Image (tube, rainbow over all chains, first blue to last red; front, side, top):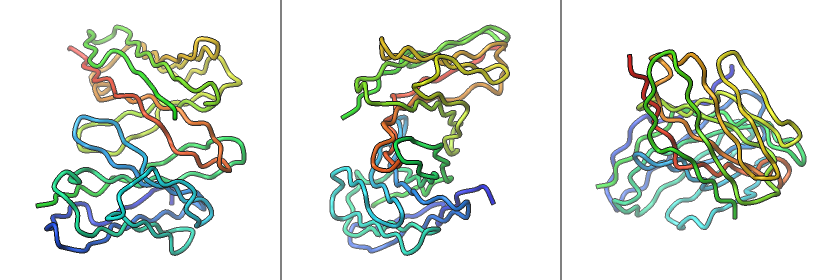
Length: 115
Length: 115
């Protein structure tokens, strides 16, 4: 399996809802990432997990809460989001190599609409 | 942090002609430079990457060059075809933090291949 999968594909939520995005990979990668991509913009890094530990948090608001239950799974828990959080949320994974960066493979994304 | 500039924002070329997209980066510690192609509604897909110990890399119609001294890298696509039409993103990474550093993307180039 050489793919990163994400569920759901689409999500509509109200500002008071709690929802979760899920990402899964079975490539044995030990680094996983969350990016946010607004329309006609590049992906922006949100979080990095390396060996199931949070290694980078790009000053993301606390209404976004990442979780890495095991080496194959990455979740993003959403609570009290704002309409401006509507975007495509992309997960990626790579095989970390000390002092270097391996190819990041992206999932298809979850398109989130906050009403 | 790293800053990646990408030009042009839109590039229109005749089918069969070559296309060149240029990027500059700010942090001399960056050592990994991938290029992603993103079609409308799809995930970013890696098309080629280069590391700082290499000056040029080629894969069929696609080539990337890197000038570490000037801190710029370029994507070259020869014999363009209609299926090359997409948004292309350059990116940079330092590969620190155990090799899971996240990518900083340029703003993207919308490549249009005119038949």
